[in-house]
Image 1 (cartoon, protein in one colour):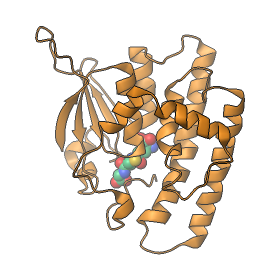
Image 2: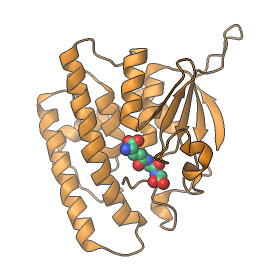
Image 3: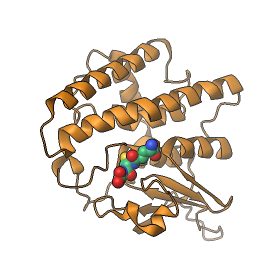
Amino acid sequence: MSAVSANATTNPNIDTTPALTFYAANTPNGQKVSIYLHEAGLPYRQVDVDLDKGEQRHPEYLAINPNGKIPALVDHGEGITVFESGAILSYLSSHYGALHPADRHEQWQVQQWLHFQIGGIGPMLGQLWWFRHGSRTDNREAIERYTKEAHRLYGVVDRRLAESTYLALDQYTIADIAAFPWLHTHDELGLDIREYRHVVRWLDRIAERPAVQRGMAALRRPTAVSPAVSPAVSPDRAEA
Ligand SMILES: N[C@@H](CCC(=O)N[C@@H](CS)C(=O)NCC(=O)O)C(=O)O
């Protein structure tokens, strides 16, 4: 595992040791946390977990995330370790207050759409990615099943975005941050999303955000092997 610091201050009079360590890889679930950290401007240390080498199953990493997947986060200041991307986004936004609505009804709206991403969009699009790019066999039935389910989910999101500027509320929240890295992978998943014009508008608007661009870029490494062009590597995009 290799570490770099990000979002750190350059003022020599300020303690620059980041309180947060983010265990990361360049996948949609990693991208969510990276985007949030950049949106909130929180200094953090990034530890890259090499999924192709199986570092997520090393005992020292399993002590951080017993489920053996990225992302995970350690808040050294609070003495808290959090795994599961939805839990990390909820922890960070409620604890540090950025992109966290004050109203409790709105907070539940955010949680509802966040859980919809974690339980629906992520697993279904993750399986579609695996059967298109990871599997050594050509399973037409699985590809058809997950393509159909992906279209159904894009439809749900499109209808929501026809009535709301963003996924949970009329303001940008962690629900959008969670859904964006998955829903923008439509080309890789062989999905034509032109009919979902509200999703297209929403994707374009989020992609323009400088913090989103920085968050996505922070995970790109020049030596990284894209799972999409290397079917022999581990199923790091396929959620169980
Ligand atoms: N529900 C989990 C899913 C995490 C997950 O599936 N992470 C993938 C990368 S996107 C992973 O670490 N895969 C490695 C493996 O399965 O061995 C979350 O949202 O954090």
